[in-house]
Amino acid sequence: MDIRLDGKVAIVTGGSRGIGRGIAGAMAEAGAKVMVTSRNEESCATTVAELQSSTGGDLTYVAGHIGKTEDMERVLDATMEAFGAIDILVNNAATNPYAGPVIEIDVPRWEKTFSTNLTAPLVWTQACWNRWMKEHGG
Image 1 (cartoon, rainbow, N blue to C red):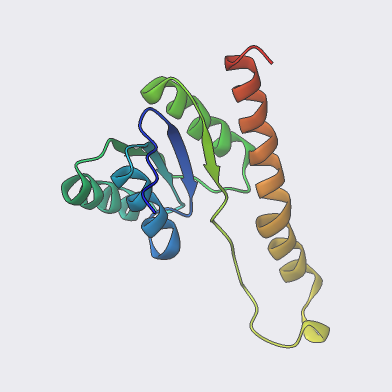
Image 2 (spheres, rainbow, N blue to C red):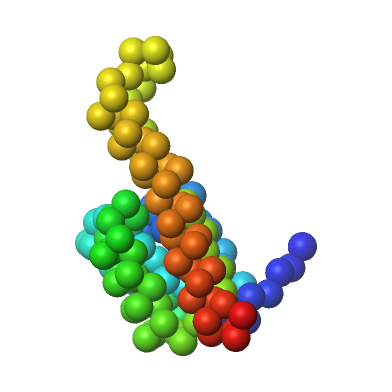
């Protein structure tokens, strides 16, 4: 299946490695302009440079933590400044700070996991939706 994303703008959280990197690359190959974000600035820079080279796509990055509102706002602002829109959000970033039986997890680790894997994607989705609606007159 050939899906084209020409003219679309995508944000990929956790986009500097693994599945997120693969998604960012596939979107760039499909013609989307891609904002890559993850916590590690060096990893973001390397990924964007490599994907630009391999896909010829229009990619940029902002390093930040998905659980920090100020980082999210920086990513969204930078996306609007660089590309003028936000059409697609891929909530890929996640954490797994505990690899054991859930009955043994301590509350701080549970709260970190819950915040990163459930609350942050909700907040990012709401923020992107609100910007999309504002941009499209909704």
